Length: 138
Image (cartoon, rainbow, N blue to C red; front, side):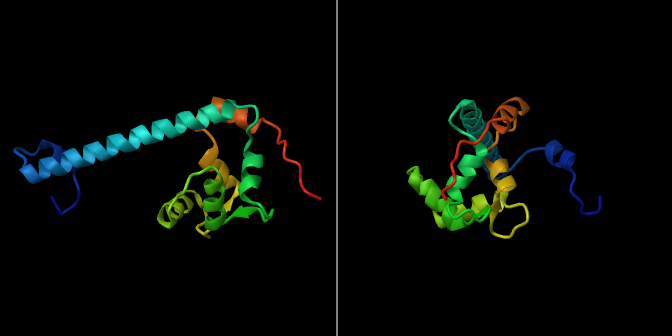
C-alpha cells in the first residue's frame, strides 16, 4: 500500500492500544453528541415552521434592521441578544462561517434561509408558502 488511507485496514487491524481506544471512544461520543444536537435543532425548526406567526422574511428583516439585504456578525449577535441568547464572538463567527455561502462575512437572505429552514421538504414548504406580515417603516 502506498501511504494512502484505507478505511478497511483501520477497522480490520488487530489489538488496539488503550490510547487508540480512548480516542475512538471520544470521537464516537462527540459524533453522537453532534447528531443529537442536529436532531434537536431540526425538531425546533420543524416546530417553528408550524407557528402561524413565523415566516422567514420577517425573521430576516428582524436581524437586518437597516434593510441592507444582509446581516453582519454584529447584527446577528444583536438579534440573538434580543432573545436572551448571548453567543460569543467565536460562536457568532462559526455560525457566519457555516452559513455564509460566498464567505464575504455577510448573511444574505438565502444564507439565512439555509440556517433557519427545516431540511424536511414538508415543513420547509409550509414555511416557504407563508406570507410575510412585516410592515415596512415609511
